[in-house]
Length: 264
Image (cartoon, rainbow, N blue to C red; front, top):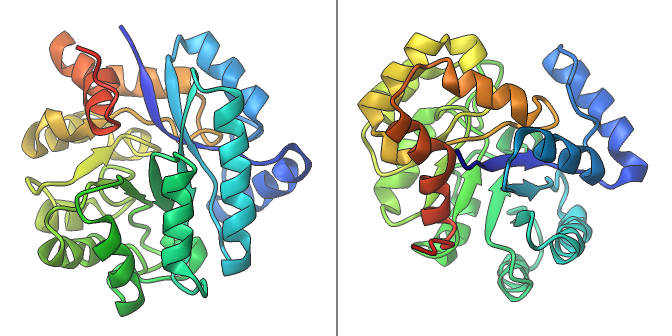
């Protein structure tokens, strides 16, 4: 079986430990990885993961350029191992310029973490970003969390109504800890879900029901490294007891298609 992991956070070595500590305190559990490129590569090798989508998050507008430069350098150093998604912040004084820079840097998509960036995904400031991305670069959005309302599934449904051509990957099965809303607002729509940090809480049987209801062709394998190592994430997906053909789509074929890397 081949694997593409579509959800891996990485951080510069000098700040990785501090970031992980902050994230562990916020989510109240111990993370399996240390967030460095070398640690992710080791985990990928151990699990036979062919390639991973890596990204970082700009929680402030002034962090956008350095974060994207870091991702550009990492991708250039390991082109055979990584896809890279840039970051953007709607309060940046030159949003359109940053989007242009992401394209010119050959970053293959954009990642948003609305909870940490303190942005509502359906707020007016986001609309000019969606307008520029409509039908082009994939956009991954951290979705859900009952503690906040920045990325609730009903807000994504509003975005999809206005921009049906957006290539959106809704992380965490469409809405971490808000899967009732996922069933109500997102199931069956033209949006990808990734499997990151969800199956342990959903339960394998409930996760499999979402896969079948939404459509296996719209499900992407994801570890959420460094929260979870790729090897553990693979085991979580296998626990759903899907068919070999379904697993092949989730683990590899769907990601290859959306990332425009289909060599067949």
